[in-house]
Length: 455
Image 1: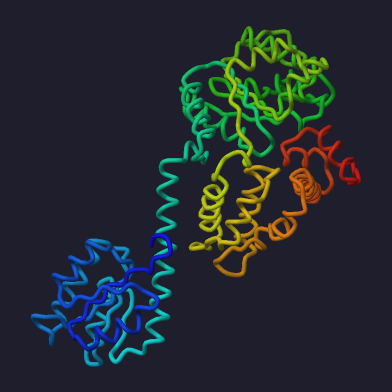
Image 2 (image 1 turned 180 degrees about the horizontal axis):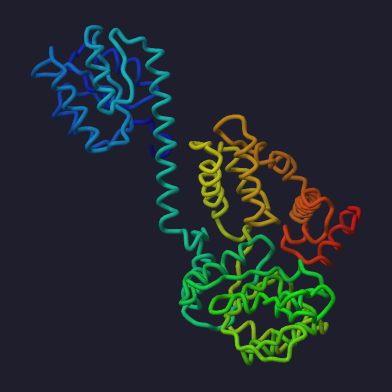
């Protein structure tokens, strides 16, 4: 259906009087196309492609037999198996009507037809047809706009996809830049899966979630007895990724002494374990990511310039969700389908109010925030229609006219920080890892929002 046009309804009925009654009763809500035999029905169906058909089984040249009606049903469904064909038959033909349902008809009515009941059924048919078309549209979009689990239809994401294709064929270090929640680890995994290293390990480490006194051992490993508690030799993450890819998330939080060792590894492809003296050759590709301003960190001396240029041979800049045209709704429907399947709640959809709220929300938490809101809505919604309140976005719509973008972002930031602290029992390390920020950044956010420190 286009614009505000009435939905087309094909009525296949050989009785002129019944056709006239149907036209009079249904013209207000539908655009009825009236035909009286199989050939005319097939021609009209091919021309107009209506979503719903009302079909009488008793058609010429044998109106006393269901043969012609059943043959018409078969031809209609062969043209479009998604069409909703409702059988309208005489009282004595109920068995034949049931047979038609078994062959693919959507439902049946016996004559004389109760018009209000028929209108109710037709309304339901069109609603289901609309949902099915929307599902197919999303599936079609995903087929062309999904890249290694990343979804995006706009030019900025298509540019990112193109960059991933190009860099994946090399072993050059890659630096992924973007706000928290934009999909930096998914991008790193996409690079790995597209590379010649795809059958080897992909090892990820969040540099901000590891205490400074442990990060060297975590990255480079340690020898037995090298420090208190080192009861056995342990390989680090760099060695564990031998032949594959090491993903260093929040690279900007690595302490300066460790930056020196990382630089040496990137230059020479050798490491030394903590407490060891042997140089170990390691063939590991490094992909790093950060949401920090590394140029600012270089200016204040907290990040080495030579390490930056060694890591940033190739840069991929992931846009924030608010900068991605209409990807928000596409992503939301993708998550809705995924989480609906996971939770055995298929057939869910968003109300127009929810779509509007999705488009208007500033998404300070980016794709991660969107994913969490949709997952929660799928679990908590009472029915199959998800509204703005199920996404906990209704309040944002109500205050949009009086709230600045900065205020809206701060409100949602506080909510995300509070939720992360609650989930992790107040533990800073766990909450920082969930939010994809460093411990110092989380402390700054807690101070900003007046949240109490518990560790």
